[in-house]
Length: 335
Image 1 (spheres, rainbow, N blue to C red):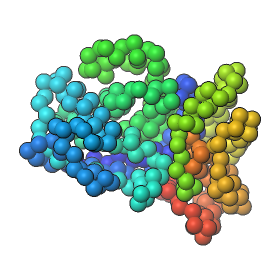
Image 2: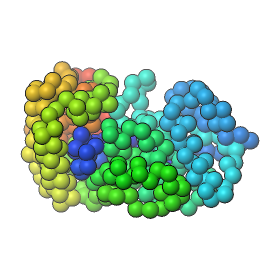
Image 3: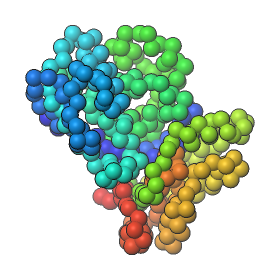
């Protein structure tokens, strides 16, 4: 049996979505691939780590693998389903060699393991159940994490996303897991989008980002009144962009440039390291072809978006970026 899970690409709403705003996410063409077969013991083999983990001996394995297995076995127990022996192989296109591409490999690992094991044990489940189990597998960083990457990995489609009410959920963590998964979560919105794909390049800056320190600095280093206004502005621009994409309206650069300028102003005023030298150089190339740019995710590295009015402009910019040695992670304008 085979399961494929995409990487995540933030189009808009990062930072705001952590605090209850809306975000737009898109799936990458790059996947994480899971294959599972019968075996005498529960085993997970990671191609990335070139290592096989015996799930009955939990020490020494990567956190997402351990947590995903633990939550799945806990959920299976509520259905009186014993864990069968299996051999699950994980292969990933979300990294390039040893370089992480900022596509949410941890979320993809979590979702892929849970989905593979539920299917292997013939459990009937829907996407929202899969999302909730993945969230519950690691619920500690709710103030710094939106779990939008989890939603994207589950749905595998462009989506509008709004995080659940963290306080509401934490008050209910002592509920039996099957009941917690089956009830509606306050404020949660996972809404697949129906639209033609905009002309967007996802360009890697060749520098790995460290999201949690940036999010923490955003949360604590900006005066509360300024931060709240920024979150509101991010949400308003993201919702406007959502409606444009839904109705295939062009151009998109008004909202993209406004988001980019908002982050640039915050970076300058509060010494936030959202931008790198590579981003500045990429912006120059993107603008040469009539496009606009913003970072995808927390900034500080990983990926930026080049947004264009036409596919022809995207293709010409793509060639120019290749010539300068930049990696094109994805071409969201491709059919």
